[in-house]
Length: 331
Image 1 (tube, rainbow, N blue to C red):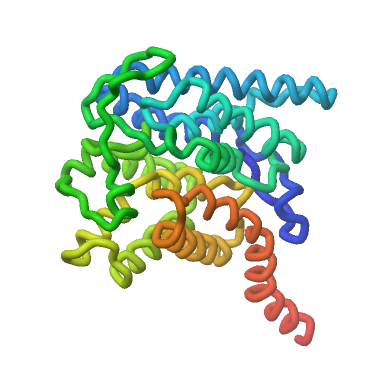
Image 2 (cartoon, rainbow, N blue to C red):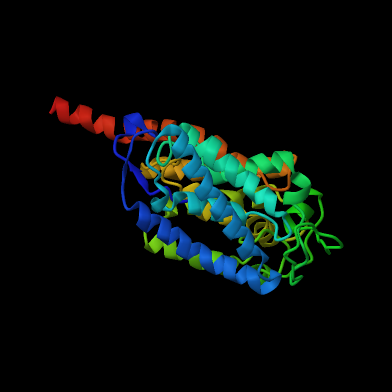
């Protein structure tokens, strides 16, 4: 999520930034993620923490290797690579092989972050790109979830793991979910490591809002858009609020709304641009869910919106500020 950077000049966005509390922003993200991982260990044992540790080690080694090749001083202390690794881990299944997260992390750090120049210069969100990559290559592994409460072993290979379709998978196949509303809130549904406990996610969201490490304009406009589309175009029979509950609480939609969409390097800084960013991202996610190949397309929507970030910033800046400048010059 957190790149610890803020744009100084909208004309040169998103490539020219200045460092602004990078360690503090990364620390905020870390604090917000820790309860989600601890909550996951209650249901699945120590494996989520082990996956997180291996992915963080991979991120550090990849960044150090890239800096060695580029003859640059490593910036590992800013914590951005570690946060990228944690975000990738959070969107993995508890039964994911150890190598799967390491592949996603390697792709994210070497080919998405460092290839563009490192911290503050990446065009795309590294964590979203890493998950999108393994989603395309290994969909059978990333969308295979154990039943809630099934303690996963730390074995390198899995055998006879009891798997269960996630609510997002049920929606994609035209079915409905048998889980009750409070089971979504308490994370008692199949899903990724850090994406099922809605109450904990909401607490993390409020914490980041208070710390100003996440933008309510982006997050809330995104969630509101997804909710409105869920009402207008429901994928399940029943009441409108049941459709909203299933859409918002399935997959890693809320997780992405909090962490992936609020990366200050790859998202707009103008308040109006952020509002449009969240709305357009919500539309894309719901389109991917309705007609896409995979049960969750949030990462692909994030990557597409990253390409529009600069355009939104510039156009919203011109829309609101240029008329004022003309009036001042005429006066």
